[in-house]
Length: 238
Image (tube, rainbow, N blue to C red; front, side, top):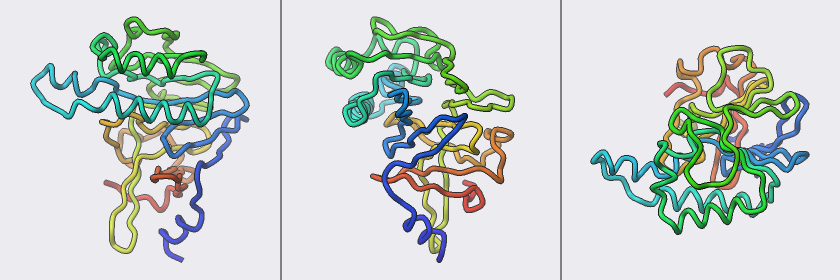
């Protein structure tokens, strides 16, 4: 059975993993859900990226915020979390929340309503978003888990981070397949970017050096409706 056949045989919807004694679910949307705590984690929304580029003269389609909010509303409606943690770079820059058109702001407020919401400070948005509820913190601890934007340089036991926009590549029958992914070695998890205008960086890139034990690395590649766990040895560089 070739690599792709094994992937397809094992594929299903969400994938459940465990880390630091916590059960968590990698959702095909790119969100992470901790059922015991009713906690949803998303990373790198980069809301208002299109308008940020437009201010600098680079015109991108102005639909990124609407598309990202629609996906966020869908996963929140499906999983009904009590707590949502946005792992930094929620907005593409510190002025993003202020530029967000009022219909988008109202949509976001509807998604946030009745939930405890944490904005983790990112490198793009270190300050609290303008005129939005929720708490802005540098990092958040839950039991033996730590949520932060950038992966730490240390051991990273129990760390859930974003920032690097991980993606994975495999080769099937001579054809290359690339997807955004969750990346984990069982000690640390790096989240895929949730935003609609965000790219990916191959998990074998040197930017990930030292973050994972290569022999334990798994890339949980995102499909349209499924998550595909791929062992590190089957991954290919960019």
